[in-house]
Amino acid sequence: MSATASAPRRRPLYTPSQRARRDATVWTLVQGVLAPVQFLVCAVSLVLVLRYLATGEGYQAATVSILAKTALLYTIMVTGAIWEKVVFGQYLFAPAFFWEDVVSFAVIGLHSLYLYGLLTGLLTPHQLMAVTLAAYATYFVNATQFLLKLRRARLDTSEPEGQPA
Image (cartoon, helix red, strand yellow):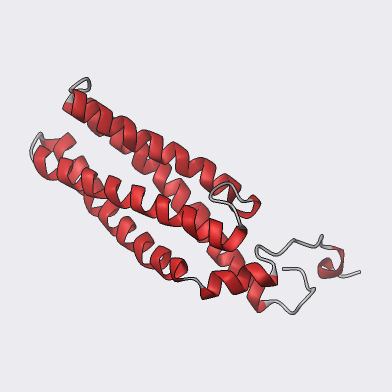
């Protein structure tokens, strides 16, 4: 018996009707544009945050970059919830993306903690940057989750119908 024949069948990420809705909605394009923009802003912001932590210089630039990253995060979360509603019929925690949404909420929580600390003055600049580093680390985990889902979706479309990966 071959390894392929004994491998358990994996449920496709999308049903045919979900795939059709995914491919037809403008929200797929919106997500496809916002995701790499957010990643790029995060990468630049990370450099600015690390620069500030290493040298004590550039607090304003780091803060502006964190605010830009946070605005993009909130935007991608709202548009992503709309995308999930269109594709899966619910705004969040669709079974296919449950864990990605859970981690997304951790990312949003950490970014929101940063905003709270900044706006209230309850956190020092170094504490704000520490929260930011935790938020960015969690964001990179979340981005990896989504990249793996994108890969899985592509593998699902490349497999003959009824064949396991």
